[in-house]
Length: 405
Image (tube, rainbow, N blue to C red):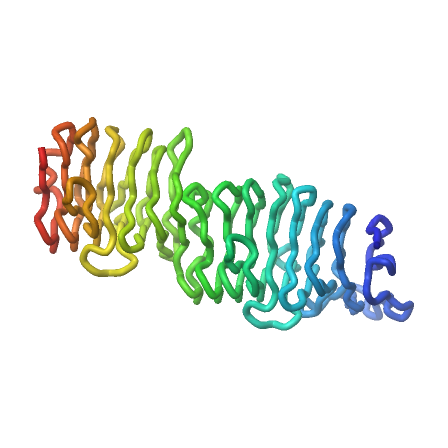
């Protein structure tokens, strides 16, 4: 068993490594004063991290591994990676960042930290699974390449997985060439910050998350770059909270794709330009304490559409609450009306009016519903009286608005 306590600037104790440094491997004096020294030390083999450890950049060449992971390892203490560190993983190897451990991997724009396969091919090593809730967990100015070879969490392949209550901040980093997702987040995991990341050439979607994760995702990250599915995927889940939650409109146009029905139990605000895609036969329910405030602009409409672009492929929006903030303005709702929302009636929007509910719809287009555009079910539902004149209804199978009192 090795110890990291005597870790020096470029040398680790022999017990830590599979191959030790020979005297001739030590850095040589720089023959050209004023230029960057070139380090070319042999890679060290890492095993379980049981004591606080700092790993230094051993090689100037960013294509060459400083450290090798040849089998699964766990991190049970604080592991700090210095800028420029490159770790090469053997086939199917993975890292478990356990509850007692933490990871600080902070590179720079000039010296990125790299987690790569020992063979540079998609889906070569398993990935990093995070169980730790440490507030210091951070991955920044890093590259995570070639992971996703084997399922790690919920039978999903992914480069990075977050377990329940796990925390990490990810910024200025690239996740690419995963054999599965770029990142997979359990429902109650916590991406503390998330900014300026790139997801590219991953076999599945860039991310799969729960509804409560979407608000932390930044607009500037790149989610659409030759991934198997260029959409941020949201599992069936509940959006909850004590305050209004605002979802982003991604700059690169990436849609937010609901894989299952989602319930809204807090204020839900969508920015102009947001696109929501719905899987077949799924719906959005505005439930107790929730409201939907989707106010776009003429130039940046908010879009609710089907993943399958055909009449009646998803069920629709269902409103169960009365709130002055239930507003659809400059919105497009397409391809809904798949299955009946109330009383055997299909519609793109359903207002559950057997209890006090309300919705205002203006400057919007409702099209290709498999039933009505809007269905008001019951006499306690309040819809703006001019709804049929201030909106456009096109290609809805049964008509514009149906009041079932």
